Image (cartoon, rainbow, N blue to C red; front, top):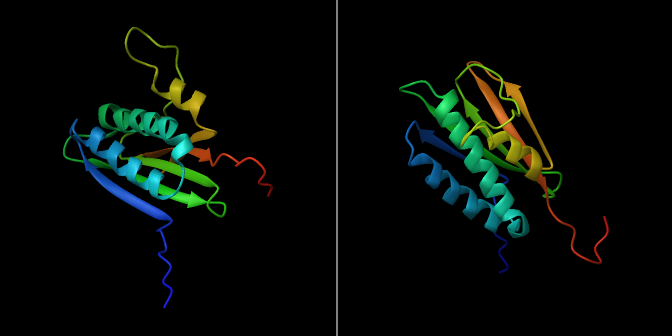
Length: 140
């Protein structure tokens, strides 16, 4: 009997408001990206999720709360969507870096194919998306 393993098209991880959650999120994302065959974009995805998780931790998660990281395969598996949900206010924007900080969304803007901010109650969702690289000789 042939059995085919179906990989989930959605993975989520709830994170507590603590610094060690960011390395844990990177490992969670590394596993999903590898399972889903997005290895060619792994470094870009990991850097972006690190920045988004750090921003949520520092600016979007009030004491006693956490944040949610959601990964989803879309477009028949060609697009990886990364969402970071937090309960804080404000709308993140790409800013001119000051000193050692302020580069997070600048990096996300440079590395992700698309990114944006959506509303949720309470808080917001900051997301980015990555398109799977075409293999040479493969046409859609």
